[in-house]
Each structure stands twice: as structure tokens, then as C-alpha cells.
View 1: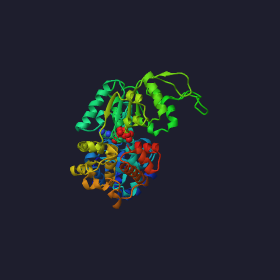
View 2 (view 1 turned 90 degrees about the vertical axis):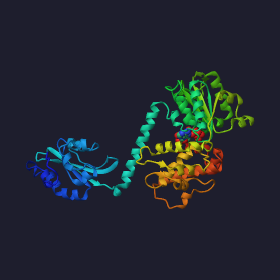
View 3 (view 1 turned 30 degrees about the vertical axis):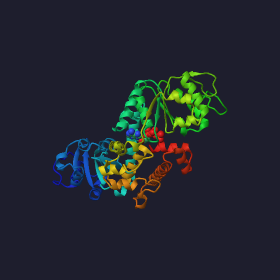
View 4 (view 1 turned 180 degrees about the horizontal axis):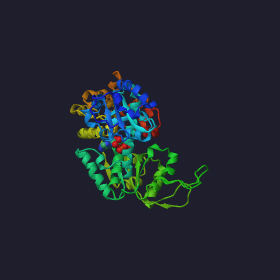
Length: 481
Ligand SMILES: Nc1ncnc2c1ncn2[C@@H]1O[C@H](COP(=O)(O)OP(=O)(O)OP(=O)(O)O)[C@@H](O)[C@H]1O
């Protein structure tokens, strides 16, 4: 099997030495080989030790190996790192349809072991069945999707290991307004006091809250976020303070911890604190003042030590004047205030934001998303009611709709940029057919963004226009992030 003569200097059947001849498997392989070789985009054979004994010139060309004779006798893994040929000679089991990555291309490979008369394995052959993969597009796109999901899950896991998903570097921006936000965030991280983040939807309040936690002395303790607007009022108290065993009919017999207990020692992020009903505001104030909470249905208080970072897109001062937000709670939360400007007030950051968001969107894809200066200027013509979350979605859509290669110019942007109150121009163009789930998800994001445009970022109104509850809208917005 260890024939090191150059390819072409011998006939294919010489792959099988005399002593190996006559086995049924060998005969079959010999009969089928020319057919397979002709139909395939490449073929290779290895010996018992998984060293290359033969490779045809089309496979060698496909792999970019140059002169095929140079690789004869080399361990196959040294030449094709992702190969599973060693596994086939080891187990004697064929791998009939396998997707193999090589130099960022996906090859569909069939690998077969072959045996001598005594049934001993003597090597394996492999055929690359398609190099353009057209007939296998659904399979390969599923594989790619899984690959991307895996990359995203790995990234999330790595961040989770650090306790939070974001650090201050993730708050992208170099404009004076963005630098001021970061300066205040650093200040907040160094002082163990309540912080109030004020900003429209999608401006990065959660990014900043996590970043503050990540550089604070509490970084190795939990960061627990709770979106007040997304939880029905009647469940909020249990969600915050937990439930004692058997607190009410049907309640769990075990103790259920609330967000305060879960965040103990760390940071509690109260998103959309302006949506908190008045009775709960009083309980929250007590918890913050006393440093203790009373789980639902228990008559015992539990000490807690949490640092609260609250955020809202609503005008708390107006709400206080209207009597719907307690002023004592406001002053308790607002020890250090960080206003986060809307994107339309820091358009100078569009370029760096696009760079960071495109990199993030393309991670795990074979795409390299880039945007031209004209593309960035086109983005500057819009007023971004959904802020950076919306910017991310627009870029994602432009990449999906755009030409191969991922370069976004002004045209590509205008095609997907919502027109205030109107339909995006893209709906007038014939679109490539994509999986239904993706089309539906995009239509949903678009409808939400349009509702936010029409309602000037007011989510209560946007939810009404869409005919969904506010908590459902919040859930959907969180999924769009
Ligand atoms: N300065 C920023 N740099 C990079 N990405 C950002 C920035 N701000 C926000 N983002 C991105 O925008 C999306 C929304 O951010 P985030 O959830 O922090 O906004 P938010 O203000 O908390 O929104 P909401 O009030 O709707 O909950 C996320 O995908 C986040 O990564």
C-alpha cells in the first residue's frame, strides 16, 4: 500500500497489492472505483497507518496541494488536518456522507475502508462528491447555521464565565458624548452607590450596567438583571423578593429565591424601573433603605447586600409630578446619574459603531461585512428611534439583502433603511427566497421598528399600534438585541 511512485506512473488498480487481491470488498471497490472517481471532485487513498498512498490530481488541485507526488507517504492528517480517514482505518467503519472543512470550504466526503482476504483492514479510500455543493445546499446551510449557533453559544459561555456579557469596551463610541458616558461609568464602578441610567430604548443601558458591574469590586459576584416592564404586575413582588415555601395555595413547597437573593453580594439591574407599580415601589424603597427583604408569605426578613443599577427610558421627573413615581425612591436610586445620548445626537460614532456591529453580526459567518463612507453617510440621514439596537438590525438586513461579498454602500443602506412612517424601499424590489422563519422574523423586526418610528420610541404606544402587550413587545425587543 505504501506506494510512493508519482501519480500517473501507475494504474489505479495497483492500489491493491497482489496479496490483497480477491476479497469481495476489494473487488467491489475496484469495480466501483473508476465510476466514483469520475463522478467525484477528488479521490484519495491511505494505508493502515493513515499515510497517503494515492491522490488524484483533481483532489490535489481542490486542496491546493500543488504537485500530488509530494504528499505521498505523508500522514494524511498532516496534509488535511480535518480529515477523518484515521478514524475509518481505526474502526473499519465507513463514513458515508460527511461534511469536512478545508481552507474555509465545505467538502462532502465519503470514506470507505478496505480489507484483505483475512478481513484485516489495509487502508481506506475517500471521494469528495461535490465541490460546488449545489445539490446539498439545504444540508450545508443547516450545517452552517449550527456552526454559527455554536460559535455564538461559545462566545456567550465565555462571557458568562466572567459573570456578564459586556465590558466597557463593548460600549462603542469615541464622540465626546460617548466618552463622557464611559467616564461616568468608570466613576460609578469605583463607588458602591446606586446608579441611574437614563436613555431611550436601544441606547445601551444594559451594556453599560453590565460593564459597570464588570469593572466594579463586585465583578466576581452575580449580576442579575430584571426588566420590570416585561413582568406582569401581579408577579413582580415574587420575582423581586422570592416566595416562602407553601406561601399560597399551589405555591412550591420549596423556597423560591427572588432577584434580590440571587444578586446577593453582586449587582441588581432594574431595567425600566419607571414601569414599577406604586405598591412595589414602596417595598423596593424599604429593601434599599433597610438592606433586607421579606419573601412573599414569610414573616421573616432576610438581609441582602446588593448594589442597584436602575435604568429607564421614561421621564421620572414628570412621573413624580404626576404622582406615579415616588420621589423618595427616585432620590434613593439617583445618586449617580448617567444620561446616555440617543444615537441621533452622536452620529459621529456611526462609523465605529458600524465597524463593531458588523464584526459582531458576521462572527461565525463566512461573511466579512464592511461599509463604505457613503454607506455610513446614508445611515446619518435617519433619526434612529430604536437607536443602536435598530442600527444593528438595519446592518443585518442590509447584509442579508445585499450582494455577495458583504460590502455595504449607500444603495444597500437606502434599500433597507425605514422611511419614517412608510415602508422600506426594499419591499418594492424582488427579494431572494429565504427560509420562511427568517423572512417572518425579519418582517416582525421591521414591523416593530416601524411602530417605534411612528410612536417616536414610545414603547407603550408602539405595543398598542402592534396590537400586542407591552411585555410581549419587550420580550421581542430583547430577542432582537
Ligand atoms: N454603545 C454601544 N456599542 C455597541 N453596541 C451597543 C451599544 N449600545 C447598545 N448596543 C447594542 O444595542 C443593543 C441594545 O442594547 P441594550 O439592550 O443595552 O439597550 P437598552 O438601552 O438597555 O435597551 P432597552 O431600554 O430597550 O432595554 C444590544 O445588541 C447592544 O449590544
